[in-house]
Amino acid sequence: MKDTIQIIFGLLGGLAVFIFGMNMMSECLQKAAGEKMKAILALLTKNPVLGVLAGALTTAVLQSSSATTVMAIGFVSAGLMSLPQAISIILGANIGTTMTAQIIAFKITDYIYVFVFVGFLIAFVAKSQKMKNIGQTLFAFGLLFLGIETMGAVMKPLASSPIFTDMIAKVSDIPILGVAVGTLMTLVVQSSSATIAVLQNFASQAGPDGVTSIIGLTGAIPILLGDNIGTTITALLASVGQSKDAKRTALAHAIFNISGACLFVWLIKPYAWLIRMISPKGNEVDVISRQIANAHTGFNLTMTLIWIPLIWLMVKIVTKIIPDGNGTEAGNPMRPKYLDNKLIGQPVAALSLVAQEIMHCSNVVEEMLKTMKDSGVKSGSEKDHVKNDKLKVDIGRVSEIKDKAEIVHSLTQQINEYLAAMFSEGTMIEGQAMQATSMMNVLCDIDRIAGLCSEIAEEVKTQRDQKDKFSKEALKDLRKAIGLILEIYSDAMQSIVNGDELEMKNVQKRKNEVMQLDEKMRQAHVERVGKKKCSAKLTVGYNNILHNIDRMGNSCVNLVDTAMSHVDFQMFLQDTQEKVTEG
Image 1 (cartoon, rainbow, N blue to C red):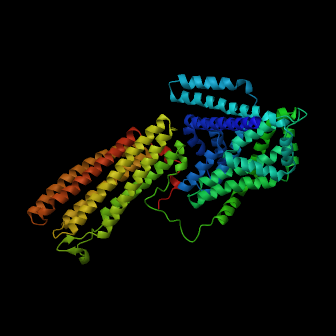
Image 2: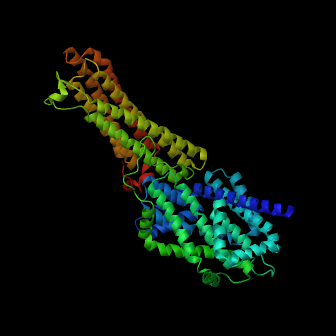
Image 3: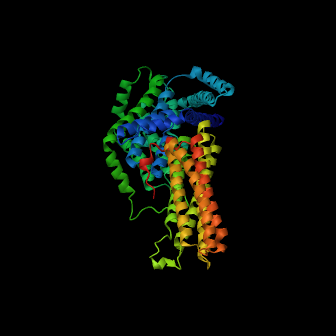
């Protein structure tokens, strides 16, 4: 009983160290090579072969197919990636994830503690964050193999247990049972890499003859197929609460692995023979780890080659299973369109989504300015809108502006919370943290302009309800000033997106036009009061509106100053702008 408990906890402990090392290595690689992920995904075009390549390279860098799959689902949900493109990424991710098994197959037992010590030393001594990340990656790499070694050590007594060997014999003789075991293992552990590592270690244990594997390649392949089915649960869980296309992407991942398992389960013996032919020769117990790794790679390569020309069919299948429905998906305007909490730990992807969400807020503010510029300004001949040469303002438009201001403010709070969560996660490198801070500054000015629009709308509503009203000339001047702010704001946001310094300088110059117009409008109002064209009671409200317009101009300049000094939206939007359609 005591030995059984030691084996169980030894296996669980080794598995825990392995998963911790693998996750730590993935996080450190993201920090060290995170910016390169954007360039890798930039390979993505309508060509599915390049999509597969992008998915494979990204997964090989991150050492996590789940990370790549979840990222693809997040991008599809945000509208940054089409469904066929995401499917090609996932096909590649399945190839890239086999790199872990190939690395594990190397026998580096004698060097485990070298990696642990050297990695710790570099991380402890290094001054630069880049070198610390490299050190932590080496340290995590050592932990990964330390976990494997621990699992292997506690499994050795199992090879001599008659009860256990009888159970394994049943699994080997009944492939469907092996598939079920592999699926269950991965569902519990939530990592196919971890369960395949356990399988490689277990298969490396010698049977009674001391030469052949306790389970053999034909017994290991069904469990391997089950591992591939079990890993789809991560993608399916990631799609919960996402858009229909995100759910379809996760479903495509499941179909890929399930269809492969259904095909290969009938070809286990010939497939095992093929793998033995192309793998290193020697005693089975010495080479089976590599054989399992090759079987894993061969499975995913074969299924990818089958599905690449059939991506159109995959799209049809998942669309049939998850139909569009009778109408479009309803969206709450108070909720972010693009942010995905599952991507908080992946800064490159998360910052791209934040940039998209900020641009969504910016578009809402631009709509507010256009509404203010156009609302209630009619020609003098339209009697329904004119009374005693005074213009009425459409109260419905005022309510619309105030509602949109509330939407922008709500989104601003949620975006800031999202960015704060990214800081708390601790996965951003210094450059990414600076970009995140600058995004907060940009968002602050966008929210401020939305708030000022609301204040102006409220002021106009107040004067509409009073006996004394702004004259036609006063509203015409206000319309001109708002139009000028609209142009400056559009140029400021365009400079942030494009990084155009010429546009930035033009915005700063045009701010002076706002100041000059503000002065002229104040003088004109005083003259109208003197000529009895405007009531003196409106002076305070009119000056408040002019003051808010001036503050809008200042916020536009702040946006440009931020663009010139820190933030670079072009880096986050260059590959996705054409894919995003604002609702």
